[in-house]
Length: 156
Length: 156
Image 1 (tube, rainbow over the protein chains, first blue to last red):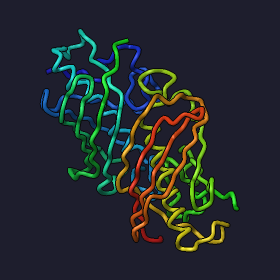
Image 2: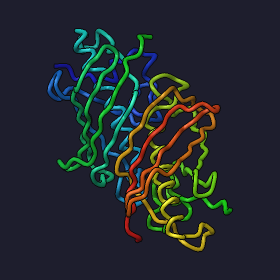
Image 3: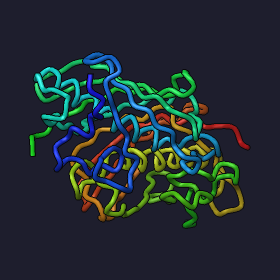
Image 4: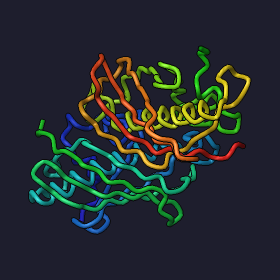
Protein backbone atom coordinates (compact mmCIF):
# COMPACT_ATOMS: atom_id res chain seq x y z
CA UNK A 1 0.00 0.00 0.00
CA UNK A 2 1.46 3.30 -1.10
CA UNK A 3 1.19 6.39 1.04
CA UNK A 4 1.04 8.95 -1.74
CA UNK A 5 -1.95 11.22 -1.10
CA UNK A 6 -4.76 11.06 -3.66
CA UNK A 7 -4.39 14.79 -4.28
CA UNK A 8 -0.71 14.26 -5.14
CA UNK A 9 -1.80 11.82 -7.86
CA UNK A 10 -4.00 14.32 -9.71
CA UNK A 11 -2.82 15.46 -13.13
CA UNK A 12 -0.78 18.67 -12.89
CA UNK A 13 -3.53 20.83 -14.46
CA UNK A 14 -5.92 19.91 -11.62
CA UNK A 15 -3.76 20.65 -8.59
CA UNK A 16 -4.64 24.27 -7.82
CA UNK A 17 -7.40 23.78 -5.26
CA UNK A 18 -7.21 26.08 -2.25
CA UNK A 19 -8.47 23.22 -0.09
CA UNK A 20 -6.20 20.41 -1.24
CA UNK A 21 -4.02 21.34 -4.23
CA UNK A 22 -0.30 20.68 -4.02
CA UNK A 23 0.20 23.68 -6.33
CA UNK A 24 -1.72 26.15 -4.18
CA UNK A 25 0.77 27.44 -1.58
CA UNK A 26 -1.91 29.64 0.06
CA UNK A 27 -4.31 26.82 0.90
CA UNK A 28 -4.92 24.01 3.38
CA UNK A 29 -3.23 21.26 1.34
CA UNK A 30 -5.53 18.56 2.74
CA UNK A 31 -4.17 15.07 2.00
CA UNK A 32 -6.46 12.05 1.66
CA UNK A 33 -5.33 8.41 1.76
CA UNK A 34 -6.66 4.88 1.86
CA UNK A 35 -7.55 3.85 5.38
CA UNK A 36 -8.78 0.42 4.31
CA UNK A 37 -7.73 0.18 0.64
CA UNK A 38 -10.71 0.38 -1.75
CA UNK A 39 -13.11 0.47 1.22
CA UNK A 40 -12.53 3.60 3.32
CA UNK A 41 -10.55 6.80 2.86
CA UNK A 42 -9.06 9.01 5.58
CA UNK A 43 -7.56 12.47 6.06
CA UNK A 44 -6.24 14.31 9.11
CA UNK A 45 -5.98 18.05 9.71
CA UNK A 46 -5.62 20.40 12.70
CA UNK A 47 -7.23 23.77 11.88
CA UNK A 48 -5.62 26.78 13.52
CA UNK A 49 -7.25 28.93 16.21
CA UNK A 50 -8.35 31.74 13.91
CA UNK A 51 -10.79 29.53 11.95
CA UNK A 52 -13.40 30.08 14.62
CA UNK A 53 -17.12 30.20 14.17
CA UNK A 54 -19.28 32.88 15.76
CA UNK A 55 -18.23 31.51 19.14
CA UNK A 56 -14.47 31.32 19.88
CA UNK A 57 -13.06 27.76 20.14
CA UNK A 58 -15.62 26.35 17.70
CA UNK A 59 -14.60 25.77 14.10
CA UNK A 60 -16.56 27.80 11.54
CA UNK A 61 -19.03 25.89 9.41
CA UNK A 62 -17.40 26.92 6.15
CA UNK A 63 -14.18 25.09 6.95
CA UNK A 64 -16.12 21.98 7.96
CA UNK A 65 -17.83 22.14 4.56
CA UNK A 66 -14.52 22.80 2.76
CA UNK A 67 -12.79 19.80 4.32
CA UNK A 68 -15.73 17.51 3.58
CA UNK A 69 -15.81 18.82 0.02
CA UNK A 70 -12.11 18.24 -0.72
CA UNK A 71 -11.98 14.88 1.04
CA UNK A 72 -15.18 13.90 -0.76
CA UNK A 73 -13.97 14.63 -4.29
CA UNK A 74 -10.63 12.95 -3.49
CA UNK A 75 -12.43 9.89 -2.15
CA UNK A 76 -14.66 9.73 -5.21
CA UNK A 77 -11.59 10.02 -7.44
CA UNK A 78 -9.89 7.20 -5.54
CA UNK A 79 -12.89 4.84 -5.68
CA UNK A 80 -13.43 5.44 -9.39
CA UNK A 81 -9.71 5.14 -10.14
CA UNK A 82 -9.59 1.85 -8.24
CA UNK A 83 -12.49 0.49 -10.32
CA UNK A 84 -10.65 1.55 -13.49
CA UNK A 85 -7.58 -0.40 -12.38
CA UNK A 86 -5.39 2.68 -11.95
CA UNK A 87 -2.47 2.03 -9.62
CA UNK A 88 -1.70 4.45 -6.78
CA UNK A 89 2.08 4.20 -6.84
CA UNK A 90 2.79 7.48 -8.62
CA UNK A 91 3.16 5.99 -12.11
CA UNK A 92 -0.36 7.09 -13.15
CA UNK A 93 -2.74 9.97 -12.44
CA UNK A 94 -6.03 9.42 -10.69
CA UNK A 95 -9.21 10.63 -12.33
CA UNK A 96 -10.40 14.05 -11.12
CA UNK A 97 -13.88 14.79 -9.79
CA UNK A 98 -15.84 17.95 -9.03
CA UNK A 99 -18.77 18.31 -6.67
CA UNK A 100 -22.29 18.02 -8.05
CA UNK A 101 -24.05 18.22 -4.70
CA UNK A 102 -23.00 18.15 -1.07
CA UNK A 103 -25.53 17.61 1.72
CA UNK A 104 -24.05 18.29 5.14
CA UNK A 105 -25.47 17.64 8.59
CA UNK A 106 -23.76 19.59 11.36
CA UNK A 107 -24.22 17.35 14.39
CA UNK A 108 -22.26 19.14 17.11
CA UNK A 109 -19.67 21.93 17.48
CA UNK A 110 -16.16 21.11 16.20
CA UNK A 111 -13.26 22.33 18.39
CA UNK A 112 -10.43 24.39 16.84
CA UNK A 113 -6.76 23.43 17.16
CA UNK A 114 -7.76 19.76 17.49
CA UNK A 115 -6.89 16.94 15.11
CA UNK A 116 -9.89 16.22 12.91
CA UNK A 117 -10.38 12.88 11.19
CA UNK A 118 -12.28 12.74 7.90
CA UNK A 119 -13.42 9.45 6.41
CA UNK A 120 -15.16 8.55 3.17
CA UNK A 121 -17.03 5.49 1.91
CA UNK A 122 -18.40 4.62 -1.50
CA UNK A 123 -22.15 4.45 -2.00
CA UNK A 124 -22.45 4.02 -5.75
CA UNK A 125 -20.65 4.49 -9.06
CA UNK A 126 -22.75 5.10 -12.15
CA UNK A 127 -20.50 5.98 -15.08
CA UNK A 128 -19.17 9.49 -14.31
CA UNK A 129 -21.33 9.91 -11.19
CA UNK A 130 -19.82 8.79 -7.91
CA UNK A 131 -21.72 8.95 -4.63
CA UNK A 132 -19.83 8.91 -1.33
CA UNK A 133 -20.66 9.31 2.35
CA UNK A 134 -18.36 11.39 4.51
CA UNK A 135 -17.78 11.86 8.21
CA UNK A 136 -15.80 14.36 10.28
CA UNK A 137 -14.80 13.49 13.85
CA UNK A 138 -12.89 15.18 16.67
CA UNK A 139 -11.69 13.30 19.73
CA UNK A 140 -13.40 10.16 18.36
CA UNK A 141 -16.82 11.83 18.29
CA UNK A 142 -18.62 12.38 14.98
CA UNK A 143 -19.35 16.09 14.59
CA UNK A 144 -20.56 16.30 10.98
CA UNK A 145 -21.52 13.94 8.20
CA UNK A 146 -22.33 14.40 4.54
CA UNK A 147 -23.37 12.77 1.32
CA UNK A 148 -21.76 13.88 -1.93
CA UNK A 149 -22.50 13.38 -5.58
CA UNK A 150 -19.19 13.83 -7.37
CA UNK A 151 -18.79 14.08 -11.13
CA UNK A 152 -15.73 12.73 -12.92
CA UNK A 153 -14.34 15.34 -15.30
CA UNK A 154 -12.36 14.75 -18.46
CA UNK A 155 -8.65 14.11 -18.31
CA UNK A 156 -6.71 17.30 -19.07
CA UNK B 1 -34.09 51.12 5.75
CA UNK B 2 -30.83 50.87 7.63
CA UNK B 3 -27.66 49.59 5.96
CA UNK B 4 -26.05 47.99 9.00
CA UNK B 5 -25.00 44.44 8.04
CA UNK B 6 -26.79 41.63 9.88
CA UNK B 7 -23.44 40.31 11.10
CA UNK B 8 -22.70 43.72 12.66
CA UNK B 9 -25.90 43.39 14.69
CA UNK B 10 -24.90 40.09 16.35
CA UNK B 11 -24.17 40.21 20.08
CA UNK B 12 -20.45 40.74 20.77
CA UNK B 13 -19.91 37.14 21.97
CA UNK B 14 -21.03 35.77 18.58
CA UNK B 15 -18.85 37.83 16.24
CA UNK B 16 -15.77 35.64 15.83
CA UNK B 17 -16.72 33.74 12.67
CA UNK B 18 -13.91 33.37 10.12
CA UNK B 19 -16.47 33.74 7.37
CA UNK B 20 -18.39 36.77 8.58
CA UNK B 21 -17.39 37.93 12.06
CA UNK B 22 -16.53 41.58 12.59
CA UNK B 23 -14.14 40.46 15.36
CA UNK B 24 -12.17 38.00 13.22
CA UNK B 25 -9.49 40.07 11.43
CA UNK B 26 -8.17 36.98 9.58
CA UNK B 27 -11.44 36.13 7.85
CA UNK B 28 -13.65 37.09 4.91
CA UNK B 29 -15.94 39.45 6.86
CA UNK B 30 -18.92 38.72 4.62
CA UNK B 31 -21.71 41.30 5.13
CA UNK B 32 -25.37 40.45 4.52
CA UNK B 33 -28.19 42.99 4.14
CA UNK B 34 -31.84 43.26 3.25
CA UNK B 35 -32.34 43.40 -0.49
CA UNK B 36 -36.13 43.56 -0.22
CA UNK B 37 -36.73 44.08 3.52
CA UNK B 38 -38.22 41.00 5.22
CA UNK B 39 -38.41 39.21 1.84
CA UNK B 40 -34.91 38.73 0.39
CA UNK B 41 -31.38 39.12 1.71
CA UNK B 42 -28.24 39.93 -0.26
CA UNK B 43 -24.46 39.91 0.09
CA UNK B 44 -21.62 40.76 -2.30
CA UNK B 45 -18.04 39.52 -2.29
CA UNK B 46 -15.15 39.27 -4.75
CA UNK B 47 -12.89 36.32 -3.84
CA UNK B 48 -9.22 36.76 -4.63
CA UNK B 49 -7.32 34.78 -7.27
CA UNK B 50 -5.74 32.29 -4.89
CA UNK B 51 -9.08 30.76 -3.86
CA UNK B 52 -9.00 28.55 -6.93
CA UNK B 53 -10.44 25.09 -7.30
CA UNK B 54 -8.49 22.27 -8.91
CA UNK B 55 -8.57 24.26 -12.14
CA UNK B 56 -7.14 27.82 -12.07
CA UNK B 57 -9.73 30.61 -12.53
CA UNK B 58 -12.52 28.54 -10.92
CA UNK B 59 -13.43 29.19 -7.30
CA UNK B 60 -12.92 26.21 -4.99
CA UNK B 61 -16.05 24.50 -3.72
CA UNK B 62 -15.20 25.06 -0.09
CA UNK B 63 -15.45 28.83 -0.43
CA UNK B 64 -18.77 28.53 -2.25
CA UNK B 65 -20.01 26.44 0.67
CA UNK B 66 -18.55 28.88 3.22
CA UNK B 67 -20.23 31.90 1.65
CA UNK B 68 -23.59 30.11 1.41
CA UNK B 69 -23.22 28.99 5.03
CA UNK B 70 -22.48 32.44 6.46
CA UNK B 71 -25.07 34.21 4.31
CA UNK B 72 -27.56 31.49 5.23
CA UNK B 73 -27.23 31.78 9.00
CA UNK B 74 -27.27 35.58 8.70
CA UNK B 75 -30.42 35.43 6.57
CA UNK B 76 -32.09 33.05 9.03
CA UNK B 77 -31.16 35.38 11.90
CA UNK B 78 -32.61 38.35 10.01
CA UNK B 79 -35.90 36.63 9.16
CA UNK B 80 -36.40 35.36 12.72
CA UNK B 81 -35.42 38.73 14.21
CA UNK B 82 -37.89 40.47 11.92
CA UNK B 83 -40.69 38.14 13.11
CA UNK B 84 -39.73 38.90 16.71
CA UNK B 85 -40.07 42.62 16.04
CA UNK B 86 -36.38 43.37 16.55
CA UNK B 87 -35.33 46.60 14.85
CA UNK B 88 -32.25 46.66 12.62
CA UNK B 89 -31.04 50.18 13.47
CA UNK B 90 -28.21 49.18 15.81
CA UNK B 91 -30.18 49.66 19.03
CA UNK B 92 -30.76 45.89 19.43
CA UNK B 93 -28.92 42.66 18.64
CA UNK B 94 -30.30 40.19 16.15
CA UNK B 95 -30.77 36.59 17.23
CA UNK B 96 -27.89 34.26 16.29
CA UNK B 97 -28.26 31.02 14.34
CA UNK B 98 -26.00 28.05 13.64
CA UNK B 99 -26.28 25.60 10.76
CA UNK B 100 -28.19 22.36 11.30
CA UNK B 101 -27.94 21.18 7.70
CA UNK B 102 -26.80 22.67 4.41
CA UNK B 103 -27.65 21.02 1.09
CA UNK B 104 -25.72 22.54 -1.80
CA UNK B 105 -26.10 22.04 -5.53
CA UNK B 106 -23.08 23.14 -7.55
CA UNK B 107 -24.60 24.09 -10.90
CA UNK B 108 -21.65 25.50 -12.84
CA UNK B 109 -18.07 26.72 -12.22
CA UNK B 110 -17.75 30.03 -10.34
CA UNK B 111 -15.08 32.43 -11.63
CA UNK B 112 -12.49 33.89 -9.22
CA UNK B 113 -11.87 37.65 -8.89
CA UNK B 114 -15.47 38.32 -9.95
CA UNK B 115 -18.20 39.93 -7.86
CA UNK B 116 -20.47 37.22 -6.49
CA UNK B 117 -24.03 37.93 -5.41
CA UNK B 118 -25.61 35.81 -2.68
CA UNK B 119 -29.32 35.96 -1.96
CA UNK B 120 -31.51 34.31 0.67
CA UNK B 121 -35.25 33.72 1.04
CA UNK B 122 -37.30 32.38 3.90
CA UNK B 123 -39.00 29.00 3.55
CA UNK B 124 -40.33 28.39 7.05
CA UNK B 125 -39.94 29.34 10.69
CA UNK B 126 -40.87 26.77 13.32
CA UNK B 127 -39.86 28.01 16.76
CA UNK B 128 -36.03 27.85 16.80
CA UNK B 129 -35.80 26.17 13.37
CA UNK B 130 -35.51 28.46 10.38
CA UNK B 131 -35.36 27.15 6.81
CA UNK B 132 -33.96 29.33 4.04
CA UNK B 133 -33.11 28.93 0.37
CA UNK B 134 -29.89 30.44 -0.92
CA UNK B 135 -28.44 31.30 -4.30
CA UNK B 136 -24.97 32.31 -5.51
CA UNK B 137 -24.58 34.10 -8.86
CA UNK B 138 -21.73 35.49 -10.93
CA UNK B 139 -22.30 37.79 -13.90
CA UNK B 140 -26.07 37.37 -13.38
CA UNK B 141 -25.89 33.59 -13.82
CA UNK B 142 -26.80 31.28 -10.96
CA UNK B 143 -23.83 29.02 -10.20
CA UNK B 144 -24.90 27.33 -6.95
CA UNK B 145 -28.00 27.05 -4.82
CA UNK B 146 -28.69 25.63 -1.40
CA UNK B 147 -31.26 24.92 1.26
CA UNK B 148 -30.35 25.44 4.89
CA UNK B 149 -31.90 24.46 8.18
CA UNK B 150 -30.62 26.99 10.71
CA UNK B 151 -31.06 26.71 14.47
CA UNK B 152 -31.50 29.78 16.66
CA UNK B 153 -29.12 29.60 19.64
CA UNK B 154 -29.60 31.20 23.05
CA UNK B 155 -28.74 34.83 23.63
CA UNK B 156 -25.29 35.14 25.22
